[in-house]
Length: 113
Ligand code: AMP
Ligand code: ZN
Image 1 (cartoon, rainbow, N blue to C red):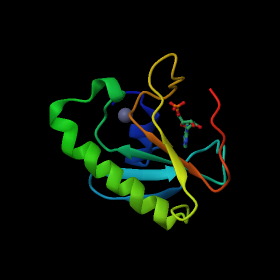
Image 2 (cartoon, helix red, strand yellow; image 1 turned 60 degrees about the horizontal axis):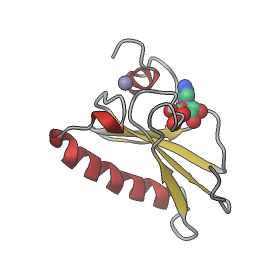
Image 3 (cartoon, helix red, strand yellow; image 1 turned 120 degrees about the vertical axis):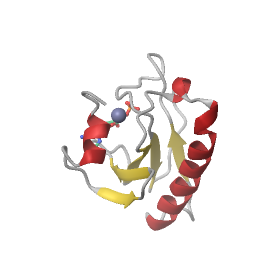
Image 4 (cartoon, helix red, strand yellow; image 1 turned 120 degrees about the horizontal axis):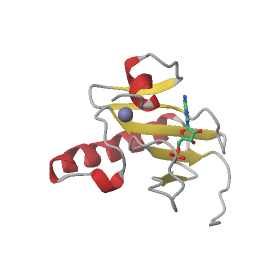
């Protein structure tokens, strides 16, 4: 979709370090990791944010969660735990407007706002 950097990553126009891909979902390493494991899991469908999800996306979002679970296992963070974050809008500090889930782990996380 236009200038969306994550759509360009999906299309291979912008390089990324992919850790998972199928017909509906892609996961790749965040370019600016905040933890030893920091992967972005995104739908191939361009959905700007969580606020744009529609009834028809219910199955896709459920499926995304199963992919997150699988990637968490592959990245070895399932045993000690991890965090999944979807920043939304201004106060959520969303910077890329293509729905994405941050999978963060590999160290003890703190809860700070
Ligand atoms: P958010 O601020 O929640 O919208 O998250 C956007 C994330 O995308 C940030 O953590 C960025 O580091 C990451 N990011 C931006 N550009 C790229 C890129 N080309 N490859 C991988 N991650 C990126
Ligand atoms: Zn996009």
